[in-house]
Image 1: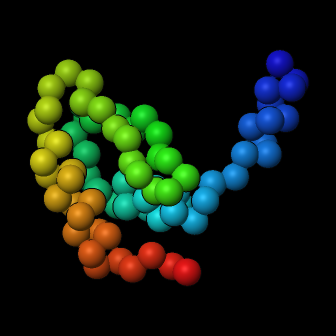
Image 2: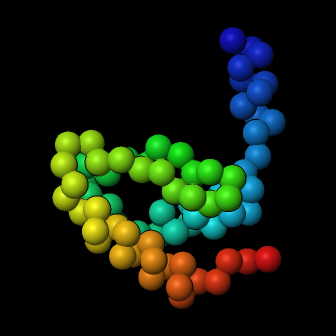
Length: 73
């Protein structure tokens, strides 16, 4: 158990993951959409838990966020 806790504290995110997470956090989401993970290159993986309601709106919001908020260097 202590070994797992130690490993978790060493894990760092990439700038692309931080940027993608900021986009995810900025967009409203239906309760049925859940974030699975964000790849080191910033690719967001999420799933619809019960139905696809809200998925189109989330994707539009993410596209708009990326278009209007340049990724910091």
